[in-house]
Amino acid sequence: MKSEQAIKSKLLKECILFVENKNATISKSIASNKNDLLSETKSSAGDKHETGRAMIQLEMEKAGQQLSIVNEMKEILKRISIEETANIVKLGSLIKTTKGTYFLAVSVGQLKIDNETYFVVSTQSPIGKQLLGKTIGESLPFNKAEILGIF
Image (cartoon, rainbow, N blue to C red; front, side, top):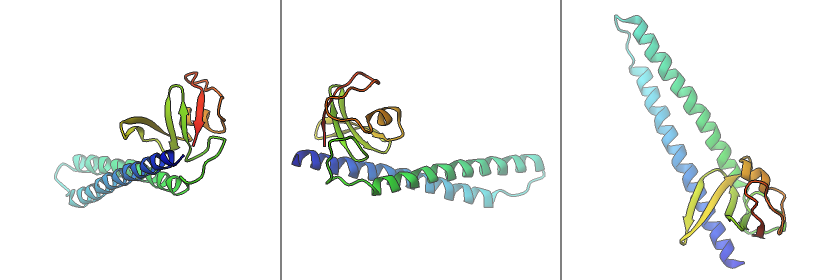
């Protein structure tokens, strides 16, 4: 049980790092776009100027939406308690199946910890939705994987 907790701790740290990196990248993009917007000067080709501003504005809106998603991911990660174990799959569970091991947190994808591969998925992903509420011995419709353990 102790080793599963250590793995959950490492996976959670990787998730936090992933979200922080994503946040930094988006923040740089927003700062760069703001700078571009301010430096966009009116030229004799007025239409070209307006098109450039509109494109920058669209990029900023897109980055704002991405930032909102990242902030949501941060909130989800704050709710995860790695100390808790349950007999039913929930947010923060480490789930061993016949087809792989999953960590229910935010969508990060595949992570390697101590030479083992883990699939880090959100509760909103198709596989995450199928895992939620399951117990040991149940199968998933997704890949006919049987749940061997929940930590």
